[in-house]
Length: 190
Image 1 (cartoon, one colour):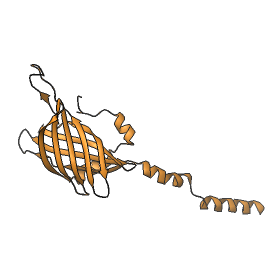
Image 2 (cartoon, one colour):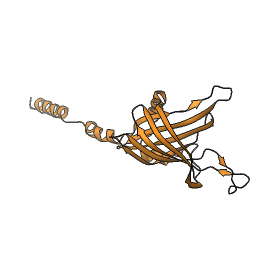
Image 3 (tube, rainbow, N blue to C red):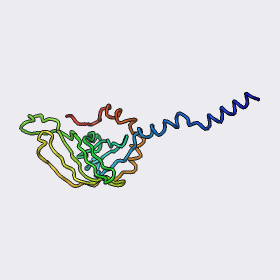
Image 4 (cartoon, one colour):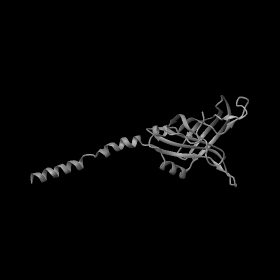
């Protein structure tokens, strides 16, 4: 009888005590990578040889900090040039977001590049607002060989793409550190 009472007491204590996974769950959730969304204004031509024009921003969050990729489509569909977001600043209260991204979207031909040209150094700088449905603001495009000059300035509105956001959620990195250690396909050559 005494053994049954001890066993019952042990089972009751075990049931009342939080499991190790329950204790670790909030810590694990706070370190988890959250997919914020994929925002896009890319237009694709409907021709035999489809071309894409516009921008995409893929955003993730870990421990309250945003990170992600910037894509620039300026030609044939596929193998879109991209670069990691750098110097990301985000104010959750106002939605104000700014970042920079280095890309190589093609080749540059100039008096400094020689006859064969050289990989372009495209520097994009964004300053605007992030909401649940849109990312809108000013986008500057600079030549990384002459960063003091602004080549192009445009106002952009990128809309949340629900399907691509779901896809990004399924392929989200395990952590920001692991993501940063991976090479960026079609990434910058500078």
